[in-house]
Structures are given as C-alpha cells and as structure tokens.
Image 1 (cartoon, rainbow, N blue to C red):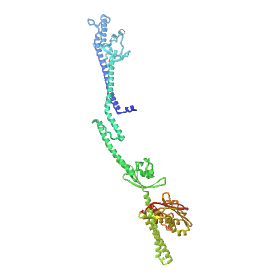
Image 2 (image 1 turned 180 degrees about the vertical axis):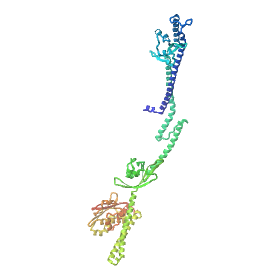
Image 3 (image 1 turned 90 degrees about the horizontal axis):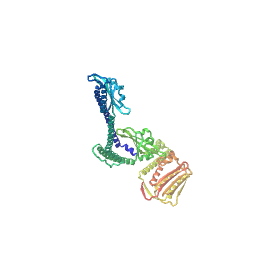
Image 4 (image 1 turned 120 degrees about the horizontal axis):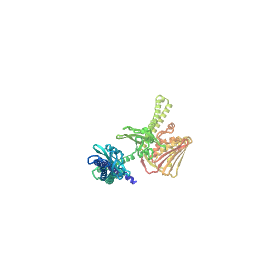
Length: 618
C-alpha cells in the first residue's frame, strides 16, 4: 500500500513527467536524426558509387572501340583483341580493389566482356539480361536504374548500371554491385551510441527530477502536514518560508490564512457557545428547520415541552407539532406568523403552545429555513379561561338576585304594598336575595384577601377534639331536622396544634354544611381527626350522601363550579365554599383532598402540619 501511495505522489508524477518529456524529445530528435543520417549515408554511398561508375565507364570506352595503329577497328580474334581483353580484365581487377565492388563490362549486345567476380569464367561471354542493364543500353541513366538487392548470404548490396558511350552511341554498359554492409553497420553503431546516450540522459534526467521535484514537493508536504494540523484543530504550527518564489509566497499566504482561520474559528466558537448558552437557558422552546421543514436545531426546553427524544434532528416539524406541512414550511422574508396550537400526549396531558414562525434569511440565497419559538401558554390560557368564567359567574350570581329584587320591588311599587300578606312575602324574598348577595360579596372579598396575601392568620393552640365537638353542636338543630347522625372519631392523646381557629372553623362549617345538604334524611356523617405519618394533623368529613360524579372531581375546587347548579343555587350556595376552604388550608401549609363515588358518599380530608409560631402573614 505504501508503494502504491508513493506512485501517486506529486514527486513521482513530476519525475515521470520530466522523463517522458525528455524521452519524447529524444525520440523525436532521434527519429529525425536517424532518418536523416541513414538517408545521408545512403546518398553519399550512391553518389560515390555513381561517380566511380562514371569514371570507370569513361575509362572503359577505349576497350570497347579497339583500333590498330592505323586507326582501324580490329577483329576480336586478333592478337590486339586478345591483348585488349587481358588488359580489360587487369583494369577491372584494379578497379575492384579500389572501389571494393563487383564489376562487369558489357558490350552493346549485352554480352559480358569482363568481370571481377570470382566466377568470372562462368559469366564472361554470357548475356546479361537484367532490366537495369537493358535500360542502360538504352541510355537510361535515371535513379530508377539504381537499386538495392539482398544477396543469398543476407547482405545488402547496391547495384548500378551506367552506359559506355563513344561518339554519341552506347557501346556498352558498366554494371557494378557494391556491398553496403559497412554503411549499414556504421549506421547501426551510431544508433546504438544514440540509444546509449538517450538512456544515460534519461537516467540523469530522472536523478535531476528527483532533486528538483524535491524542492517543490517538500514545501507542499509541509503545507499538507499543516493542513492536517489545522483539520485536527491545532493552529500553533507555522510554515517555514524558504524563499520569495511562488512556493514561498504560498507558504506566507498559508500562514496568514491559518492565523485568520484561528481567529475566525475562535470567534465562531465563542458565538456558538453564546448561542448554546442562550438556547439552553431560554424559558421558551426554539426549533430551527431547513427549507424542507425538517428540524436542524432544537433546544432542551422544546424537547421537554413536546416530550421528544434526544435524536429528533431531521424529523419534519409538521410531525412534531401535529400541524399541516404547509404551515411548517418557510415563508417569505419578513413574514412572521403566530398561532396557538393544542398538543395532546399519550399520557393524557394537553398542552397549549403559542408558536411563532420566523423565516431565516441568508445573503443571495433568500429564505433557507424557519425559526420556530414555542411558548407554553397552557397555564395562561387556563387562567384566562378561569378569569372569563369567574367574571361570567360573578355577573350571573349578582344578576340573578338583583333581577329578583328588582322584580319584587316593582311589584310592591305596583300595588302589592296594599296587600299586607303579599307585601310581607315579597319583602322576605327581597331580604333573602339581599343576604345571598351579601354572602357572595363577603366570600369574594375573602378570596381576594387570600389571593393577595392580605389576610392574617391569628394562630392559637387548639385542642382538636373540643373544636370538632363545637362544630357538631353548631349543626345540631339542622341534623335533628334532617334526622341525620354525626359521629366524631378523634385519635386518643392527639396533640394540640397551632392554627387560626376562626378560619379552620369556617372550613369545617363549610364541609359539614355541604355534607348535611347533600345527604338525604336519616343519613350518616363522620367527623374525625388523627396524626398521620408525616407529622400532620389529618381531619376528615365523610358522608353517605349522593356523592359527586367522577367527571366533576377534577374541577370541584374551582370557583363558582357546581355539580348541580340549579340545586346548589336553590340551597343558597355561592359555589365559593370549597375554593375558600382550599385557600385557607394552603395558607396553613397543608393540603385538601376530596374523594367521592356517585350515590355512595363523599370524603373530604385536609391536613395541617404541626408547626410552631404565633402568627404568620399569608
């Protein structure tokens, strides 16, 4: 693997590039040089041979036009002719030694007169029928009359035929065959020298390439190492600037970039920490989505608010908030939208969330996502709903007696005063409605003081059994009228407790009064007290009356809430008794609990811790 990685390095690539460039140049030069050299050698050889053939042809002209002393042509069979032939053979032999070639002298009829070849006796007197000889006899001296042949021994030879002329006539032909092996051997030797030089040059080029490429790749390796440090988060290393060339300028620029990158990342880290701190400490939930409405950032408050898992990134916002996909997609720049949505969870809990959608804008890219701010307004909405119901209930509770009073006063004014019995009854109804209004206003003022913590607890040490006995005595007449029995069950040796007797009496009176009202004739009521394991005084009121339906138990302590509104109003209740009792018990640091089964009975229990002190402000 290391070898493969080495072959992929820039240094190897540079060396290969240099070597290939040199090799290509050498090949191009060599090809041109070889062809030019070979052509030059062959041309020189051919020209030299041609010149020699021309000279030889001129010298042979006298042999082909034999004359006697008188200038007459002699017969071939004469003594002069024989001497001529002997001299011709001798002359050819001398030329053979000079030009190192096989020579034939051919007459005008194509008959070989003399030859320098070893088998001359077999050739002389024979007719030479070669095309080149025939063309020379026709005085054709173009280059087409030259050629190269390969002998039976595999040697390359140059053959040439030149006409012998006399008086403008062709009287014979000189036919020369010269070996070119020495020329081709010389060419081959020069080629070998060239290729050896090429190999040496390539080796030197590769060595120089290694040295020169190292001067380039070494800074690049240092830059690569620096990039690795930066990728690992280390910005302490600096590149060494070795010169003012391009590599040096790159190193200097890279060092500057490293410093700026370090500052930018430090600033980015600081901003990210600030953002993370802001997101984690916000009381509101924050969700960021991309262009497709998928979650990319979410803070812990939003996860807790929506009861989400940790790995929620990438989930569509519409799925999380249970809204339409169109609502979760980014909007136009500057378009902010706020909605109230109700979220229900599998555990039965309901949540009211105010959701504000704000588009994310990036330069030259437009809207790239959405910032969603979640505010849990469940309590606010419940308080607002309670306020609206409270106002409506107060208005209704006041309007009903006022309407009755107004009606009866108008009746009295219209003549009912003239009838004493009717007038007395109307005045009695008016008085009862007025007392009802007074009780309502009194209860409202009491609740207002408790809510604003203006009511004071005047605590004193109380014996619980005596307090319960007095409560039973206060309701003895009503119990007798309804034929209802009350039983007091108090734990023995129950410690005294420091409480506001008047307010606790108000709580007990309300609970016992409700028990009497909603228990039929011949009913049974238990009033008891004990000390529980949490060091608290636990007092309960239990009856076997009509009870409360299960659906109404969760709202029984709400102000003006009545299970049977018509019956409660007829019985003179204001719907604030249990609310006042709850506030009084909470002011004592305790708690109140109501348990009931419809048509079986109701049990109300409240606890007060055993604390020391004389008086406390609520």
